[in-house]
Image (tube, rainbow, N blue to C red):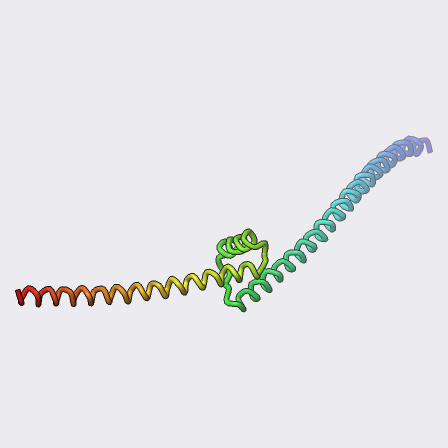
Length: 148
């Protein structure tokens, strides 16, 4: 029995060491679990944020597509966004988005363009008449020279 007493304290010591190691492992596992829980919460938050951003992006895409389709239904193509944006900027600066001011301005411009076109036609007709008169004048001068 004496032999058992010698083994027994050694055995107890070894088991105590194993218990300490297991408790250390248990503590490390608890810490890992806490870390993983925190990472899980952070990941879930990222997923929620990403889904929210994705929904926002889809809403923005829908708005853009609807706007583009609406503009194209009026024959306004928006492939060149820069030109389109400058046009809208001009409208805002000119009229603060007052459609009646813009319509009046374009109406005035159209009237002026029509007047310019009409005056240009009159000018062209007068130039043609002037050339005819120059030809007639030259013809009469030639006849007068022959008479003298």
